[in-house]
Length: 108
Length: 122
Image: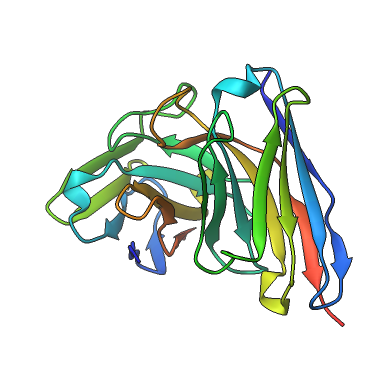
């Protein structure tokens, strides 16, 4: 089955940039979406179709993709960005939705 | 506004059954695929199942295939998840999630419910 691998944790100081990676075989051929989940809350979409941002999501959140890796970048990190982040793709070869392993972002 | 409300969770013994419901409102329910996604305590997100907008296509994670059945009643704006032969590892918060693209190929999830907790324990 298709697997998306993320680093378990990322630590960043306020005002700095957090980079969260998502690796998957041939991910370049798939659309990657990203979710933020704060403690005790349901996930919220922050980036869709690799680079698009839903209304209401700050411009500090951006997505990119290159080779076998997709990346979520959070610029000028704030304390409120502390959360778990998940990447996701629809794997059409297996008709399965796949979530990444998740990355906990800690703001120092 | 778009709302998804799950119900039906609870404590159940291993091997027993449970049926979850997801009621949608604030959008044209019959135009959107609906997923179930679960999250075990302290763990990550795991996709469970999907029903297409009209119920014609249904897909399942390998971990639940043959035990869980998804269905929908568009006249009632409701999706169901029938869970049989439950195991302790099925213990999780179960989210009902809307697929964003109406009538289209499956993509991303734009609205999530608050979840219903299923605990499988003797």
